[in-house]
Each structure stands twice: as structure tokens, then as C-alpha cells.
Image (cartoon, rainbow, N blue to C red):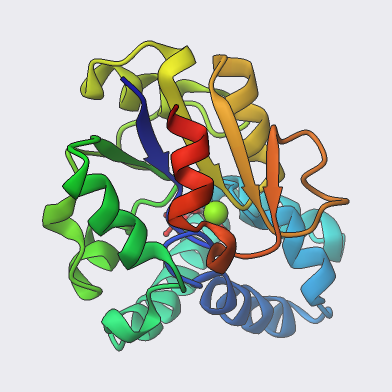
Length: 215
Ligand code: BG6
Ligand code: MG
């Protein structure tokens, strides 16, 4: 029996744009520019690691205390966007897919790097749908380490070869591959070339596509 593990940011909801806005404002305050292209490097990556990458881009060195302060500033701004979210922000095809999985009695878990995942799922009304939620609060190692997906598989009582991971970040695709799971990448073919399957967007996660995966 197959099970599904969903990444959150960029798969269920497009929160990447909010992460970007908050990081960009921080970069501006620190005196350097931060482009959307550079933001790709932060996708799937933990909050702490994201700040390190951002500071590398800006060539800025800060004390541990200052870094902690900036992490809090970034998250406060990010949460301002998150708190305005509604179910309208669920990406195309996701609700249909969740309905189909429920109908077929196929279990599914969240496997996200975000510590804000429970709040976001509640905001868009999906929190109660998942058999398990594994997020940034449950892991000690960030993607591409497979820890988050291994914990999710355990919670779903599934062997890795029966897990299908839906991911928009290269780090997440790599984590799924290392775990021995099937990886479905959502986004740019060039960035996600390591995925077992690549779809341009969640709208292509059709029931037919999913049926072919689970046979
Ligand atoms: C991932 C995002 O899902 O979560 C990253 O792709 C983000 O961009 C990470 O940095 C951590 O999120 P949060 O909500 O804990 O800051
Ligand atoms: Mg993601």
C-alpha cells in the first residue's frame, strides 16, 4: 500500500513569496540586495540555515546574539503574512488530490522543514486532514537529510519504497531519494532533474497521474 508525504511550502501553499519578502526586507536593512533567483537557495532549507545563506550572499558577519535577533525579526514579519492566509491560498489540484486520497483510504503525512507548519495548515483549514504532521519542530537535521521523511514514514507505518514524496525544493527531492522513496518534484525541470517525476506545477498533480503512481 502506497502512502504520500507532502512538503508544505511550495506544494500545498505558495508561502515561498512570503518567506522571500521577509528575507528581502532583512537584506535591505543589512544593506544588500537579495534577488528572487537567490531565494531559490533558501527553498526547503531550515530558518537558521536560510539566515546563514543570506548572510553569505551579503558577505555579512554577525554575532550569535544578533543572528538570533534577526531570526525573530524575520519570523515576526513572515507570521504577519501567514496570519492573513485563508483556504484560497491552497495551490491548484491539492484539495482534489487530498479528497481522492481520503476516498481511496490512502494515508498521507506532512514532511516540512517549517516550524510554522501547524499554524499554516490551520490557517488554510487542512490541519485535521493529515494522518501525521512532521515539521521543523520534530527534526534535528535539515533536508537533504532524509530524517523528516523517515519519521513521517514511521508514523504512517510505511516502508520507504512505498512512500511517494511531493516536493518543490531540490534539497527535498534529494532527501526523498536518499530515503529510498519515490520523489515527485514540482517546479523547474533544470533545478529538480534528480526527481523521479517532475511536474511544472501542482495543477499537473492530476488524479490520473496519481493513479499511475500507486498501481
Ligand atoms: C521550508 C521553506 O518549508 O521551511 C524554507 O521552504 C523555510 O524556505 C523553512 O526557511 C523553515 O520555515 P519556518 O516557517 O520554520 O521559518
Ligand atoms: Mg517546499
